[in-house]
Length: 387
Image (tube, rainbow, N blue to C red):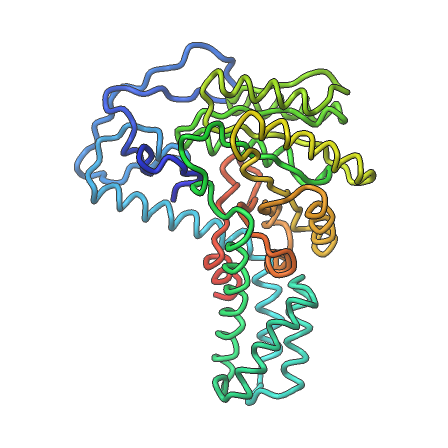
């Protein structure tokens, strides 16, 4: 499954657009920069139709594969990501499933007591009170119309409603980078969020994964309020081999962004990822700062920033939802990155965000590794919670 795809006519997942003769291969992050190594043409033995490669190599290695081999590899990778995603939400699944199973244990009919217990189970998973009330109201309507008359149908109705909420949120904000025409470059992604939610790590992972899909990426260190922010980004930039534009602490963030926009256009970058200040204690200043940055970006590239992604720590639960509400007011957020989804038993916060904010969950952090940032798939998420 491609991680980031905008150039539809040029990019095809799994290496179809890669050079057939030779290609560069990225060095180990621990090795100092030097001339790129050359990768000799790869001849695949007939008995090994699906060679093992890391997920982010699938679109940059020039492998001479048949359509059947490509389809087999794509299926294998999708299965791998599905398994990893399922493991990531296992804590939430175990908590939610155990509570729901306890509710349904021995239940022979659907009554008010069962629905009250089910309400408590959903709220405990951080799906939130308003969202839980909405789900149960839909369920009650189904019961009154005799459409839900047994426990299994009740479970299916809950799953269906959660999925409907998540998919409905994709109709708002920005649900796909492909919505921006290919001739507009660079594609500007502004990343916002309070300090400590994993914003810097998310930027590093985004840069690595988007670059690995065959795009030229540049990072802008526009959080000049906190000295450590640029230092952390510099480490990620070195690790991922993505250039970083930064200036000294206290520099006007809009000035750093202006320089970055110029640099991105000069080098023909496909994507510019912009870090921003992670503070909310002075909302008026933050709003003015972000608005100025947006004006600068819009003057340089049509429609920029094309996405404003809010990073939310899933572990913080309802507190994270409140942070999201505040940033939504001042930052014009278009989508959510939900980090640390693997570290909480309350991953139901994804549904609460989608319902209460009406914003799509764009990406999910499911671990510490560089490729542990995945495109959020609502159907896979709901199935992983219940199956």
